Image (cartoon, rainbow, N blue to C red):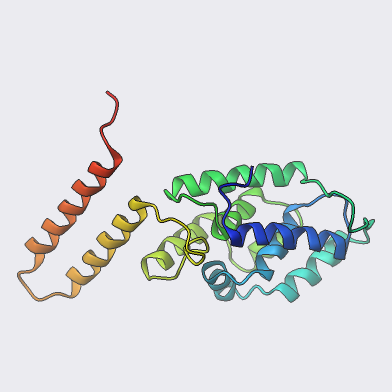
Length: 206
């Protein structure tokens, strides 16, 4: 099930299980996933949280207060995913597919956590101004600005589509600052990159 998950996102799920042991619960829930994300140090998600002013400490304190006293389980017990987290993991896969990413990273788990609208996490997100559309756009912009994806940080394979789109963005950004008369050259490079992407994608079925 988790073959496609990057090391950072697997680490987040490990942290999430640890959070269940710490604050109580019989299942891994979206709130535990959020705390796992806040524990991880992947550059992109860390930057999103920093911009929003959301820290592990304040999120943990509020989740504990809202969740109340919960039954705790032994560390040796298998802790299942709740139905909400199962939906969340499916959303994470869809987010990765929509962004044409080969691996499921922490950025996709974050978007999926926003999508789920869990009663323990939604008030936190709302107060810190984190919405799924705005966060998705922030992630796209950070990628264009060169902030490393969680799965690229571990040397995992790059999707040619991602590489070409990043090159196009950089070329277009350069074009906006280039000397007058460079527009035709920039446009030709972008067309060449589009042709390369089509070639790599192969012929499409009629």
